[in-house]
Length: 468
Image 1 (cartoon, rainbow, N blue to C red):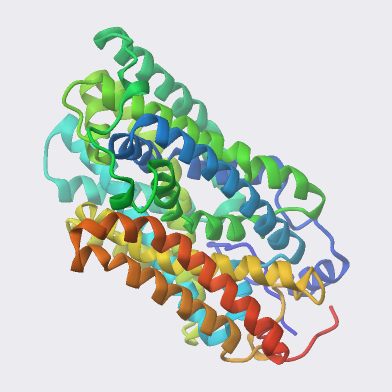
Image 2: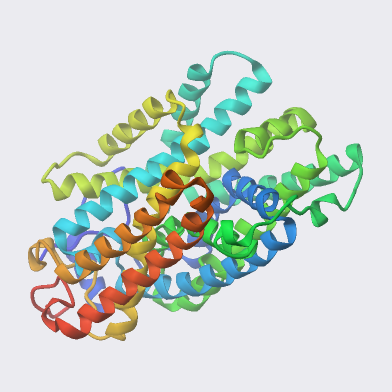
């Protein structure tokens, strides 16, 4: 049995395979990242300017009070789910691609892997476009030139993978991001006045039926569109030490992380939106507002925030693109996958992709939430018994695990049907966007649970249990 290191070492080789095999058998954590390094690497995700935007968007659409209630529920929900997934990934050292073999089989895992890769690449395109827009707003010039600059400086940052540099880079940049946004709030309040408009904002007319329920529920459902964070968690958590499980459950991947990533960012976004005159509730609008308000300091804040998140986007995009290629028997050096990912990102940045953010989030959100629901159901139903490690080769798995695939399809179809409500009847668009993600999770988990009880021979894609 060949054992591969779970880290995505972009420099290269599979040396010391036998030593890695021995450590995997003994449960030795020496080959894993320290909790501080892993936390700093993952906290780069917290600085996505999209999180600033979505908080402001929810407050604008449903009112600040509803947005805050929905946000609190979101943080609690994310904290619980990621505590479960991070513990499983750390104890079993399994990534999304490897775990998907269990619930979907190797062929099904290939689908999940390419979806994850494309979503990570999409976010890299989107967040990179924000940096390019900020550079263009400050210095002038053409968007394609600044897009090229962003890709050229971002790509080398992930050479060597998470272990070599990303933890240090994000550790250095975090204070600039955090205190930069604090400075932006103080600056905006000083210039335009500290008012309570941002706290008391409410939509002119709230229609619970049209929204499918109260505004806080619509906010909660909106944040379900970025459950891709659950996949981010599993891939990063696979690099952690087993002795640090509780720390990672609460701090690195749990509620503390989301208080910063979602809570703090939403507070800043809502305040700036209702304080700076003329700011559009778009990610580029907020970034442009910061640059206009703070000049070069605003540009630095935007650059830092987007560079930190894009280290994760580029890394996960390249890692999962590589995993997808290897499923198709395409063997290339790691650095080649990085270059391919960078070229795809640049070409997509030339397209008006920012305009399709909400549509893309809705569609990928359905696929991802269904996967997360099945993953949670599997972990709960298996109760930690007979769990396989990520070191087991593909040859020991079925091409398809029908239980997982049927549940995934059922949940996805449910979500997509609800998303089409707005196409056939605009008045029901809110019903579809609110209940689509929620019912996707319910249906996917329920179908998987029923199949687990009815078809015990298809509970896992693993053909036979292998002694570790």
